Length: 595
Image: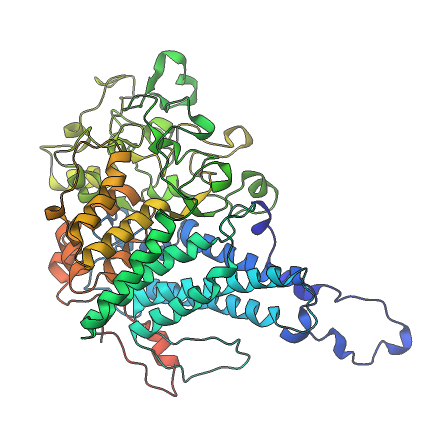
């Protein structure tokens, strides 16, 4: 990327700070060197650097998951129906409601991250209107403002989905404030909608700069926001207004899916279009020889387009990927030169640990066992097995190349050396429950989204912990699933089934959806198949309303913690207690169930 993330946004405050002076003036005060918001900006490039800070902020929140409990819970989905923690990470469990309360750091860190993004966006909007800023054209200025408004709306959409009604802050603040007032959840969504609709026409349909915002990103978020608004209206007893919201969601979904430049990739493409993933059954590098090589294709080479989507160099629209709408930029050269955050620590955080429970048969930290994982969070049995029950081999998203389930023994003394290790052995069937729990929570199928057969930078001293590919923030299949949801909520189950079948046909499934099959659970299951390791599952569950989040967490959690301790119903995270306590001049109400 690239230039979007290389430099900090605060460096502009020091431009021209040191200038020449004569001795007689040395002790005199010079207010020109005192920087304020009004005089710190002198060029449009400096204003754009604030936007660079916004892009970087989003990337940190969504992609930089190392040791970051906010990311585990936010995008990683820790504690949802899809993800739980291994036995060795029980101290980081996020579904034990005997210990979860409004003072938990995850809630506060996440909440404050969104307001930090809002603060940056507000600063960019203020600076863009300063009289001393010269713009190349009115269109340049309009695009900067549109990006800033997008970031502000994006933050409020997330805050509304996770926390409900929150204070809407539209100005930069220079003094402490203790009287913030919450809006309603509907009002929070409406503010985000208004922001995006105001910015829509100033966002380009395409851009030559990978990672920069385009109109489709706003339309996708509007589709989601109008669904959110419809659900919130129903929850607030205003169900009569919900159909209009769902109709708007469908319209914005149509704009992206049917009326724009995007389309599902259906033929192999990109940097490895003539390849399939190859692995060596080897637990040390010296054993990675041709006689230890095996393929993990699973589908004919001409059909495995889903695997192509997650190979390095294939993520951006500018690289020929027509389903890429918004992509975070991860640049290896920038990482080596100066940007130490330009990496996806997915293998480390999400990767399994075969080497401990399976040391007799599967050891090491090479590609064949998913790289150097430390299993900070793991897919539940629902995510890895239940959603494919009865459908094995009938879905490209469950192929060996995409969701690898075959592991050849790599320990020479193992009876399975060079042969597939059965899952009954991997899961230690017949042993103690403790042994089974250790195995099942540390050993699991490996997604091509979190691992690869070709790690970048090994010769430079990198290890197999990190990926250096760009990362999707919005991919067209999610828009399709949002439109399907909106159609379902509007009563058009046949239309919803047709949308879901767009994805199933691309995945070469022979099991298609009928209108009578469509319900919320089907939508959530399809999101799990298509968007595993991509979507923000907490947002998805909480915005569904009712008891859907609670019911599914209880049903699919690996551990019994929520089944034993989740005695309340909720579809909102709590307002962080520190926020309530410091807002001393106005009482800020806590969300239901969290008092």
